[in-house]
Image (cartoon, rainbow, N blue to C red; front, side, top):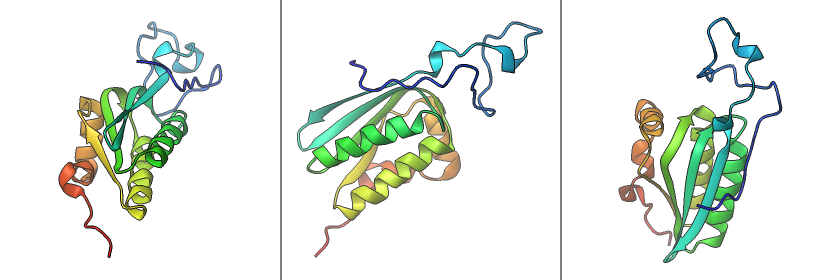
Length: 146
Protein backbone atom coordinates (compact mmCIF):
# COMPACT_ATOMS: atom_id res chain seq x y z
CA UNK A 1 0.00 0.00 0.00
CA UNK A 2 1.28 3.44 -0.85
CA UNK A 3 0.71 6.24 1.61
CA UNK A 4 -1.08 9.14 -0.01
CA UNK A 5 -1.97 11.15 3.05
CA UNK A 6 -0.51 11.01 6.49
CA UNK A 7 -2.08 12.91 9.34
CA UNK A 8 -0.45 13.12 12.73
CA UNK A 9 -1.93 15.29 15.46
CA UNK A 10 0.11 18.17 16.82
CA UNK A 11 2.44 17.12 19.67
CA UNK A 12 0.56 16.89 22.93
CA UNK A 13 -2.86 17.06 21.25
CA UNK A 14 -5.06 14.02 21.74
CA UNK A 15 -8.70 13.26 21.28
CA UNK A 16 -10.39 13.18 24.68
CA UNK A 17 -12.51 10.25 23.49
CA UNK A 18 -9.71 7.96 22.33
CA UNK A 19 -8.14 5.95 25.14
CA UNK A 20 -4.38 5.97 25.50
CA UNK A 21 -3.21 2.43 24.93
CA UNK A 22 0.13 1.37 26.30
CA UNK A 23 0.62 4.20 28.81
CA UNK A 24 2.62 3.09 31.79
CA UNK A 25 0.80 2.90 35.14
CA UNK A 26 0.99 6.20 36.98
CA UNK A 27 1.44 8.25 33.80
CA UNK A 28 -1.50 10.41 32.92
CA UNK A 29 -2.99 10.32 29.45
CA UNK A 30 -2.13 14.02 28.98
CA UNK A 31 1.59 13.38 29.43
CA UNK A 32 1.75 10.41 27.07
CA UNK A 33 3.54 11.14 23.78
CA UNK A 34 1.60 10.88 20.52
CA UNK A 35 1.38 7.29 19.40
CA UNK A 36 2.46 6.19 15.93
CA UNK A 37 -0.86 4.34 15.64
CA UNK A 38 -2.66 7.68 15.32
CA UNK A 39 -1.37 7.85 11.74
CA UNK A 40 -3.92 7.46 8.98
CA UNK A 41 -2.85 6.04 5.63
CA UNK A 42 -5.03 5.96 2.56
CA UNK A 43 -4.48 4.48 -0.86
CA UNK A 44 -6.73 4.32 -3.89
CA UNK A 45 -6.80 2.45 -7.15
CA UNK A 46 -9.22 2.03 -10.04
CA UNK A 47 -11.27 -1.15 -10.36
CA UNK A 48 -13.29 -0.98 -13.54
CA UNK A 49 -15.65 2.02 -13.45
CA UNK A 50 -15.22 2.35 -9.66
CA UNK A 51 -12.44 3.57 -7.41
CA UNK A 52 -11.35 1.61 -4.34
CA UNK A 53 -10.03 3.55 -1.34
CA UNK A 54 -8.20 1.59 1.34
CA UNK A 55 -8.24 3.22 4.78
CA UNK A 56 -5.62 2.07 7.29
CA UNK A 57 -5.31 3.36 10.84
CA UNK A 58 -7.45 5.49 13.09
CA UNK A 59 -10.18 7.79 11.82
CA UNK A 60 -11.37 10.43 14.27
CA UNK A 61 -12.02 14.18 14.24
CA UNK A 62 -8.31 14.82 13.63
CA UNK A 63 -7.88 12.44 10.68
CA UNK A 64 -11.40 12.34 9.19
CA UNK A 65 -10.69 15.38 6.95
CA UNK A 66 -7.76 13.51 5.36
CA UNK A 67 -9.93 10.49 4.68
CA UNK A 68 -12.76 12.68 3.43
CA UNK A 69 -10.50 14.49 0.94
CA UNK A 70 -9.22 11.18 -0.45
CA UNK A 71 -12.76 9.83 -0.74
CA UNK A 72 -14.01 12.97 -2.54
CA UNK A 73 -11.10 12.77 -5.00
CA UNK A 74 -11.87 9.12 -5.67
CA UNK A 75 -15.56 9.91 -6.19
CA UNK A 76 -14.71 12.68 -8.64
CA UNK A 77 -12.38 10.34 -10.58
CA UNK A 78 -14.82 7.41 -10.77
CA UNK A 79 -17.57 6.72 -13.26
CA UNK A 80 -19.87 4.74 -10.94
CA UNK A 81 -18.72 5.37 -7.37
CA UNK A 82 -16.35 4.42 -4.60
CA UNK A 83 -15.71 1.21 -2.68
CA UNK A 84 -14.22 1.93 0.75
CA UNK A 85 -12.08 -0.85 2.24
CA UNK A 86 -12.17 -0.45 6.03
CA UNK A 87 -10.55 -3.78 6.93
CA UNK A 88 -7.44 -2.10 8.42
CA UNK A 89 -9.27 0.56 10.48
CA UNK A 90 -8.32 0.42 14.17
CA UNK A 91 -10.45 3.33 15.44
CA UNK A 92 -13.65 4.72 13.92
CA UNK A 93 -15.75 7.45 15.51
CA UNK A 94 -18.71 9.66 14.59
CA UNK A 95 -16.43 12.05 12.64
CA UNK A 96 -15.47 9.17 10.37
CA UNK A 97 -19.08 8.08 10.02
CA UNK A 98 -20.19 11.62 9.19
CA UNK A 99 -17.49 11.89 6.50
CA UNK A 100 -18.79 8.65 4.96
CA UNK A 101 -22.40 9.84 5.12
CA UNK A 102 -21.49 13.15 3.45
CA UNK A 103 -19.70 11.24 0.70
CA UNK A 104 -22.77 9.05 0.19
CA UNK A 105 -25.01 12.10 -0.15
CA UNK A 106 -22.61 13.67 -2.68
CA UNK A 107 -22.35 10.39 -4.60
CA UNK A 108 -26.12 9.99 -4.87
CA UNK A 109 -26.44 13.59 -6.10
CA UNK A 110 -24.21 12.57 -9.02
CA UNK A 111 -25.85 9.18 -9.66
CA UNK A 112 -22.98 7.26 -8.03
CA UNK A 113 -22.72 4.95 -5.02
CA UNK A 114 -20.53 4.33 -1.99
CA UNK A 115 -19.99 0.75 -0.84
CA UNK A 116 -18.11 -0.30 2.30
CA UNK A 117 -15.95 -3.38 1.83
CA UNK A 118 -14.74 -5.58 4.67
CA UNK A 119 -15.27 -3.21 7.60
CA UNK A 120 -13.05 -3.94 10.58
CA UNK A 121 -14.69 -4.99 13.82
CA UNK A 122 -14.41 -1.41 15.09
CA UNK A 123 -15.99 0.15 12.00
CA UNK A 124 -18.67 -2.58 11.88
CA UNK A 125 -19.65 -1.84 15.44
CA UNK A 126 -20.23 1.87 14.77
CA UNK A 127 -22.05 1.19 11.50
CA UNK A 128 -24.20 -1.44 13.21
CA UNK A 129 -25.03 0.59 16.32
CA UNK A 130 -26.05 3.60 14.24
CA UNK A 131 -28.09 1.54 11.76
CA UNK A 132 -26.07 2.92 8.84
CA UNK A 133 -24.39 -0.30 7.66
CA UNK A 134 -27.30 -0.98 5.28
CA UNK A 135 -26.68 2.35 3.53
CA UNK A 136 -23.29 1.20 2.28
CA UNK A 137 -24.20 -2.22 0.87
CA UNK A 138 -24.48 -2.88 -2.88
CA UNK A 139 -28.27 -3.24 -2.46
CA UNK A 140 -28.45 0.44 -1.37
CA UNK A 141 -27.85 1.57 -4.96
CA UNK A 142 -30.29 4.35 -5.87
CA UNK A 143 -32.58 3.98 -8.83
CA UNK A 144 -31.51 5.92 -11.92
CA UNK A 145 -32.82 9.44 -12.32
CA UNK A 146 -35.04 10.20 -15.31
